[in-house]
Length: 83
Image 1 (tube, rainbow, N blue to C red):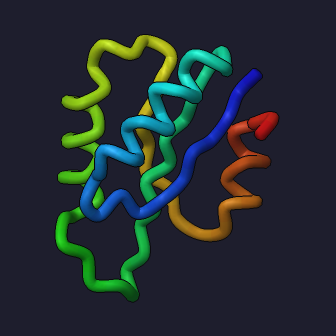
Image 2: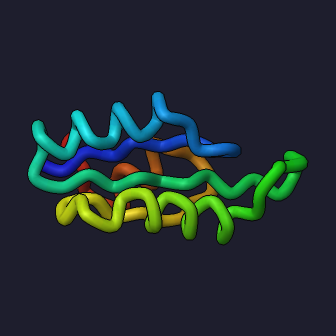
């Protein structure tokens, strides 16, 4: 089963990491979708947020970090996610 955990992650928090680690034990694949929204002023660029998440989650094999923009429902359909 594939699940998407989406958010801005600006900045990444221990709560985000807790949810990701817990999801990684429940699902075969966890996609962390980092939202890119050009109309919002972010503390970190989406590239920086992705890099931070990848560094923090390097040891979790079934987690993939990706950027997305637009509606979450469309992203879920593109990724063929279950949840």
